[in-house]
Picture 1 (spheres, each protein chain N blue to C red):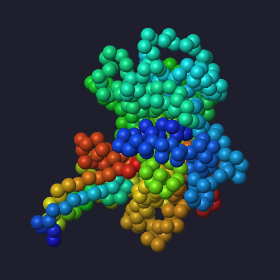
Picture 2 (cartoon, rainbow over the protein chains, first blue to last red; picture 1 turned 180 degrees about the vertical axis):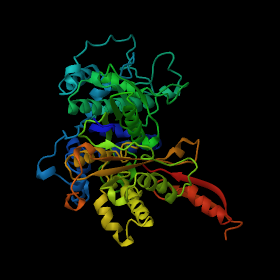
Picture 3 (cartoon, chains in turn orange, red; picture 1 turned 90 degrees about the horizontal axis):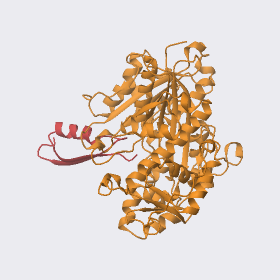
Picture 4 (spheres, helix red, strand yellow; picture 1 turned 90 degrees about the vertical axis):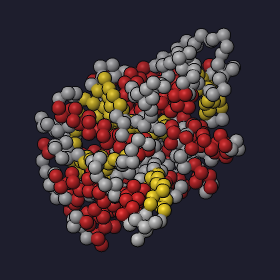
Length: 502
Length: 41
């Protein structure tokens, strides 16, 4: 056995939650100023089949490769049909696209507080429990519970003014409350919308973790450690952002032998978490580590204004989640390069210029490893779906990043300037992840890369994740994190690149 | 070149950061009265 940590398995899931778009940060703030807006948003929401058909979503869950997505003409939202022209499926090769009712069922079981945060009406509580019981991955863990005892003044009949109605297809399924206990009632951090954000992260992350365990065919008890890399901030007034999400997710999935912790690094947290997981495995501290990231409720509908203006469906209607299994070397799976100098970083003292940033987390790790730009078959930068970003004027983020990577290759004389565009075609891909902050940051390609390496289509991929840490208002710094995965050396060398199908 | 000029700087995470632009403007003698880098993702 070798000494490298490997990406043993992975999962990617989406939960299409159109009726929660109203609780995304941007829609929620705008609806508070314009009462008519909620109705306009409701009229622009996608159906579940439309979200399933959407080619970037099919790519996220592994039914299309990024290369196949690149060949599909835009606008993608008008595309119908799945890979090979068949009917697209909610079940993907990497995970699933959950519909809204299934997500509410997950939210219901994710809620462990008493009195509950999410309180479905009795009819819907039973329906949600039945829905989860029929799910192939959760069914074995759940059994319908007896109705909870009703308090003297039921919150259903007299919900707190700050409770949020939870809808599914125009039907009110119940309410989401703030922490109603005495110690929570005057804590602004325990308001309903904050707790809905946190519980949505937990529920969506649990879906990805369940899929990971299923794909790897291991029991939850075989997980040693869980690292959560979401962007939520759990905690009350004395420890806002205190964390604990990793163990909450692990608890929901029955990882009773595991401990865990949360990694925070804005959008780059998944990359940072994978590096940490690899280092912990390589040190021998843990054998089997899960890195998991739940979805961001706050970012639902972030670009809704552009979609309304163009009379398009609101495309940022999915919570996304992902999970990776990092283990000791199995001699087969792609290794994470973690020798000294292999991981890219942006030092605190680095200049904020683009050239300096890319020099730090792109050029220097390649140089330290003795690799040239052309030794990397695929680069994975920020992979936001351009169809969501361009409509709002933010441009094609992936393309911007590829141009900078190519520019650095030219500056370092690895590439002729005239070769930039064709090289980008080879090493790049379209963005296909929903605007979910940490989710699109490089790692959507990790599953595809793992398959491409196993399938001998590529030898090596580099992941470049950015973090807007200046958003914490405590610094003006920016961060970047990079790492490289490659074909397991125990499999021997791969045939020369010219013969490979990228 | 920009001595005595007051400037307002907007940057973007995936384009040019305001910090980098401000550094250039200051080097050219300008006073940066406001700067902000936006993150649209």
